[in-house]
Length: 361
Ligand code: GLY
Image (cartoon, rainbow, N blue to C red; front, side):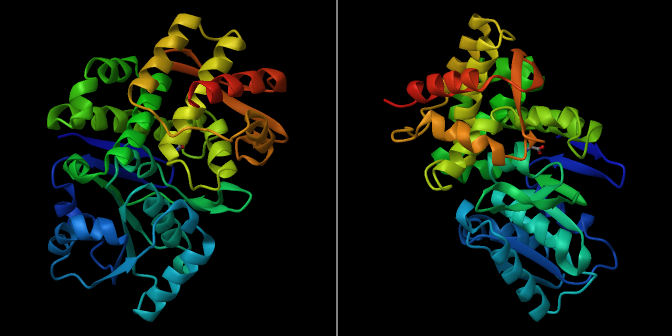
């Protein structure tokens, strides 16, 4: 199975996509490392903890339970974890292993970025969303009341270990939420991946091994290349935010309680497709193909009670708003997007209204 490399100015690191990748964990723990702290959640540990216990046999380690959930992705939880590390003898030689979904990858990575002013982290993503996006690329952080991921740091891992086999135990809703991020990757950078998602829909939904591995590997290849070209999101990396502008607004508007991140991104992508068409960048037929593909992996939960106007109002506090100008990633064709700022608010509202209507029975 493939190994991809992320190359950034400070560090190059491998991203393994292979069965039982976690069993290689000890190969990536530095020789003189002190205690290893595994940050995980109860459900991930119940399902897959034995793999990690075996991989860490003979290595001094502690398992720290994070409560999970977007509402707990807060600075106060990071502080609690840091206190537990100190109490258990953590020091500058400690290593964090973030073992779980995207939220665990973000929180565990941020804990490592801050503990004793920075210790190494190894990412072992266990959800589809985390394997194809959150676990790769070094973005770490927590939410503020005023918005998602507004407090964090770039902290590249020593390695990312991805085992597509663990996806077989993922709840259906979480799996589908990850599939939207795969579709995102196809739309922004890989027409082949998009076509795979369209043609192999049944096999993908049935989680057939070969196609799942191919889908994850193709997604990781795109993510590794984009991050290597632009670690700090000053240019190309912004394309990974396709669907995230209105997606983040939807998550914040519904207090992170109604939609999984991938579901909110699916809504945001639908709106961005409409915006692309209204703005004149995207052909209507191509736009329909994208939105049909998104719908074919749905449905996402209804937006009943959510006003498009309220979502648009929220855009000012998003990270993608720079000096008051809201940025959108808009498709030009399947496999290519562009970043556009300063779009007329009436057009954004119209696009958001169309998407809200489509997903609200
Ligand atoms: N999830 C978007 C990024 O890693 O830049």
